[in-house]
Structures are given as C-alpha cells and as structure tokens.
Length: 180
Image (cartoon, rainbow, N blue to C red; front, top):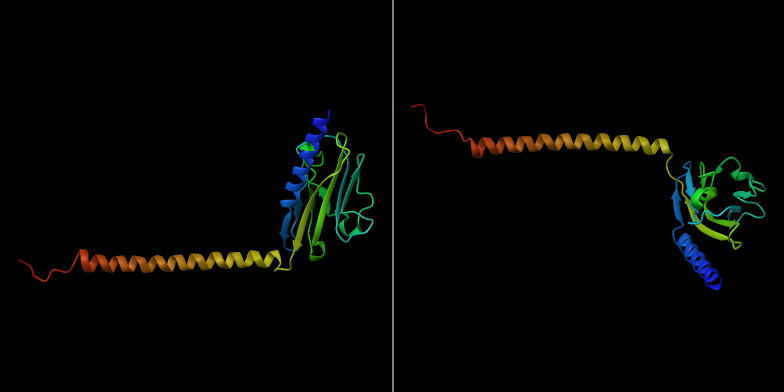
C-alpha cells in the first residue's frame, strides 16, 4: 500500500513538472486559444477550477459535482468552455474564445478526482499581444502571394531568355559559310 501511495506521488510530481514546463502560449487579439490541462488518469472529476493570477475570489472556469461556472468572473462569461465536455481520458483543457490583451496572465488548472484527493494542476502563461487585425493579416498574405507569383513569373522569363540566348550563341551558332 505504501509503495502505491509513493508511486502516485512520483506520478503527480512528474505530471505537474511536465504541465508547468509546457505552458507558454502566445496569441493575437480575437483568436481562440486552448489552455491545456491533461492527466493520463480517467478518474471521476469532482472539481475542476481554472483561475488566473490577479483575479480575486472569482474564477475563469469552475466545475464541481456536475455544475458549471459558479463564481465565474464576468470578463469570462460566455467565452470559456471545456474542450471535451465529457472530460474523457483526463482531458481538462478549456477553450478561451476571442482573447484580448487583458487576458494576458498565468492560468492555473486545479483538478480533484475521486481517486486522488490531492489537486493536480497545470500552469499556462498566456501572452496576448496587439497586432494587426486578422483581416489585415489575410490581406497581407494575399499581397505577398501575388508578389511571389509575379516575381516567379519574372524570373522564369529571364531564365528562358538566358537559355535561349545560350542555345543560339553556343549550341546553334550561325554558320559563316554560304550555301554550297
């Protein structure tokens, strides 16, 4: 029994270290992001809390005993949902919709299961930086593609010209002698 408890502690430590190490995320305003929180255990979740540094007495996402989002910060109302509503196979990630610069911060996932009374957690540092709106990025991409096609066609014309000149000059030189 002691060996099992020790193995659970080692597992939880490694899971926590791996979750914390993997948790940096960058986004542009208006994007949807997934805040990752996973566990290899399929245990029954009794409590799942996503919080953010700087929020006092309220949460980004809250689930307990089958009920969602009690005590949720109004800034997150309607913008956060479970990536897998059934939380199968230890999937506790949430989707944060339409992020803005005010969403920048450290998010923590705390999970309590029926088999492990100790809370497991993951930490994700989300950085939302100002940038051009998505429409401007798409227009820039279209311009860049058009410019690339134009340059490609121009280079092809030059290459064909150089090859034609070389063929005429070196492979099929004009004969100096007249007709026989």
